[in-house]
Amino acid sequence: METRTCIKERRSMRKFTEQEVSDEQLQELLEAVRWSPSWANTQCWEVVVIKDQARKEQLAAMLSEKNPATKGVVQAPLVLVICAR
Image 1 (cartoon, rainbow, N blue to C red):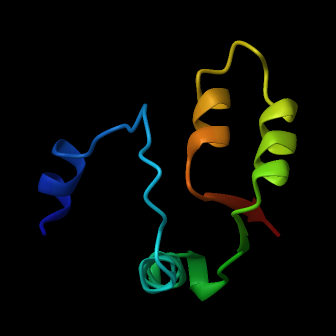
Image 2 (cartoon, rainbow, N blue to C red):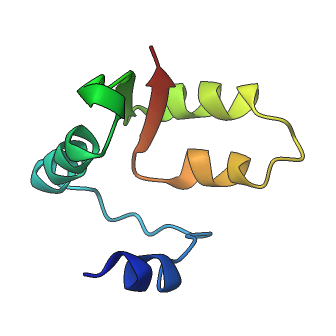
């Protein structure tokens, strides 16, 4: 897919199904992160995968009540937290 097409056709998810993300799909996502560009291949990030409902609720509690993503964090089948290192 062309970059421009990808950007133009992207979507924001506001509601999630209860369908789980398979380990294969998760690995594909993490592989895409690994191959994403970084200056001098420093890859100065870590990805934390959160599947546990209690952990997702803790994460949501750290967000501002006005943040529209708060509900989505709890409802999503998993959350990827990208951390700089």
